Structures are given as C-alpha cells and as structure tokens.
Length: 68
Image (cartoon, rainbow, N blue to C red; front, side):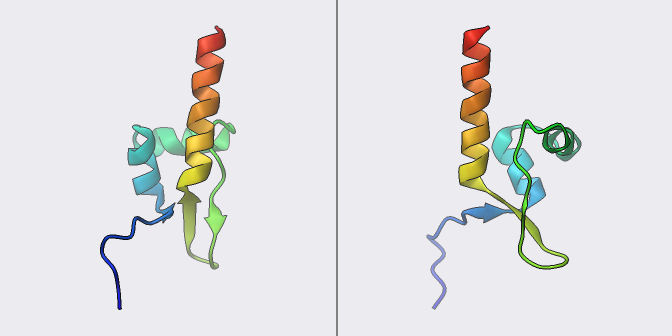
C-alpha cells in the first residue's frame, strides 16, 4: 500500500531547482559548474537529485559566504 506521508528523498530537476530556490536554467548552470551535485541516474532516461546531496551543497555555500 502506498503511503502519501512519505517524503521522497530523490527528486526531479524541477523539484531540485525549486528546493534550492532557483529556476531550472540556473540550477543546470550550478550543476554544470560544480556548485550543485550531479544527479543520480536511475535508468537510461530517469535522473533524480538526492535531497541530502542538495543539503550538503547548500551548507557548503553557506560556509563559503560566511567566510567572505
């Protein structure tokens, strides 16, 4: 039975961009330059982002901005 209260750990690019607070084009740029993590490839056509990896990237950005 499916439980609607389970929060997904793996999310789509659109959801990942929203989670980080940017649009999908900016999110793609951040992934391409290494600021945001690469996706997890589940199959040939399905890629997802791990929210824990996104959280780590956000924390790294916070630390970097705090040190400036």
